[in-house]
Length: 214
Image (cartoon, rainbow, N blue to C red):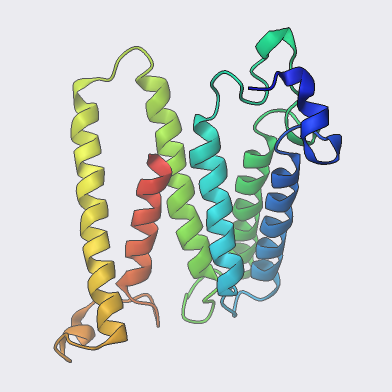
């Protein structure tokens, strides 16, 4: 394992490790947020939306666990590695959250957040909110369980897992029915919907919440 003293030699452009990923994350997030702010009546392009969730998964799931020896900033061999882009640690994650919160507040003040059938771009905000809320729950739970997890923690985990599995079952059934209809025709009329958007969007948000909380 190379020592932190080698980071200038090993990292792209001689920047601290993670700087290029941080720059890419901020550029993609700014594009998604800008698209939502300017045209909430349009759905966010699938390639941007999917890429955004890959980035969120990296920063709030994978990167959150990479704090062991040899990780950036771990100080191995007595040499500290600067955070990505020389920004204070956690800045990129904070900017990602603030960007989506700012867009949600802006659209709400303009009256463009709801109804969702007139502003389908808000579906992306719903999915992002589910994931980020899960990440927040994870952060709070980790602080409370630092001295040992209480008895209710297992019950909470079971409840979250059950809800996520039920949401996944709904999502899978609806996705297959959309690809090759097999559900009774009258059933779709009785299912609650968000305008033109069905329960699959809420199910996806709940699954995103579970991944964020893990």
